[in-house]
Image (cartoon, rainbow over all chains, first blue to last red; front, top):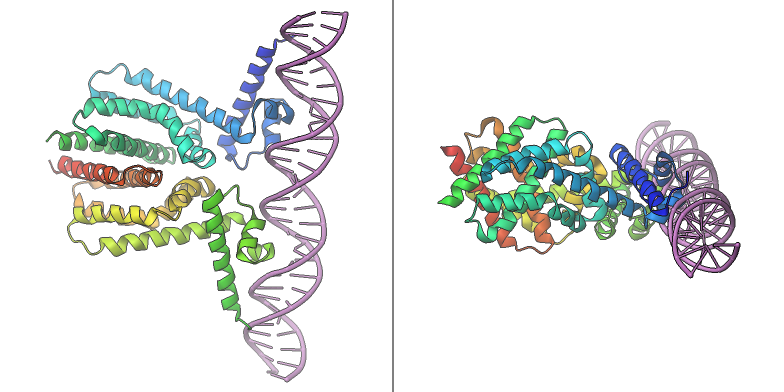
Amino acid sequence: MSRSNRERTEQTRQALIDAGRRLFVEKGYAETATPEIVAAAGVTRGALYHHFEDKKALFRAVIECEAKAVTAAIEARSASYDAPRAMLIAGASAYFDAMMGQGRTQLLLIEAPAVLGPLASAAIDAENAEATLRAGLAAMLPEAGAMLEPLTSLLSAAFDRAAIAIEAGAERRHYEQAIAVLLDGLADHLRR
Amino acid sequence: MSRSNRERTEQTRQALIDAGRRLFVEKGYAETATPEIVAAAGVTRGALYHHFEDKKALFRAVIECEAKAVTAAIEARSASYDAPRAMLIAGASAYFDAMMGQGRTQLLLIEAPAVLGPLASAAIDAENAEATLRAGLAAMLPEAGAMLEPLTSLLSAAFDRAAIAIEAGAERRHYEQAIAVLLDGLADHLRR
DNA sequence: TTGTTTACATACAATCTGTATGTTTTTGAC
DNA sequence: GTCAAAAACATACAGATTGTATGTAAACAA
């Protein structure tokens, strides 16, 4: 019945992160109150403020966790391809799969930039999903040069917008097609 | 010394919108308290809740005002061009000009989606800047067909991301170049 | 075993939002 | 010009929320 301190900490933190994630998705960050979070996690506010500096810190923990999960899902699927273009297309599809259904678009693309600031949010993205995209683009467009960074950023934004649109009910097929056209156009144009 | 009711309303509303805009940019929506807003506007909370249903409604008024200003700036500049490509490039440049320096990126691209929801925010955008972009793309890419909508959405997202990056200190020239490459590649690819 | 640190729980102070109610100014009809 | 009604505020209040301070029990280290 007695748990070690490490176990206690781990379990409590995870319970808070899980409950927070569920409620942040359901109601948004601002509309989710800490008493509600701790009730869902089966602890008290004391535990929350013991493990996290404040409400925002709990949110940051949730976001970092989700970002890593998305990146892992993408790399698991795009690793099996070889040609750069196929890898990017597969990566895009894996990205949409990973973002759908868990309210991840709401968390990662809508709430996080506002709550954590665009810089912190962008930093988390850059470490995760965007890094995969940059690598793919570098392989597909060796002649990009100094424009690799801006293009990565712009296409990453396009991916994000597509995820939001699909989540909102738009035709996924149309957006995947549009992304493919964008990538192919880029390859066409830079090759000349 | 006596003002008509219309004048009173107009002046009070404008004072609240101005003060709100300044503080929302400075500290973000969630961190800006209504007592602070009304103090800056020189009125009381009674006036605020008389003219706006709640804090969010004031924010919405600020956002709609800014979105219109941005659209007006774009159309004023891109109207003088004739060729679709030149018009789009000029429109992009005008968009960046309009977004810089007043914290508009923070307001329109970061806070608005989180506070108003992505749908409401997208609706405001669609009525304004995105409509200009769609018209330009339709002229430049008559063969786009069903992909016009998705492409408009994706490119609009790319423009937004570029504005955020430039505001954060990135090289504007590089991003304008990347946008041009994206557009030209699209034209190249769809034409064949 | 015992003192100390860690992990929580409870109580509290400050603030904020939205509403309800009161007061002053404008307006429209006579 | 007067007067009732409505609009434009101002003030007071209730409920809820956040972060902190303080108290307690369990684990750990000596």
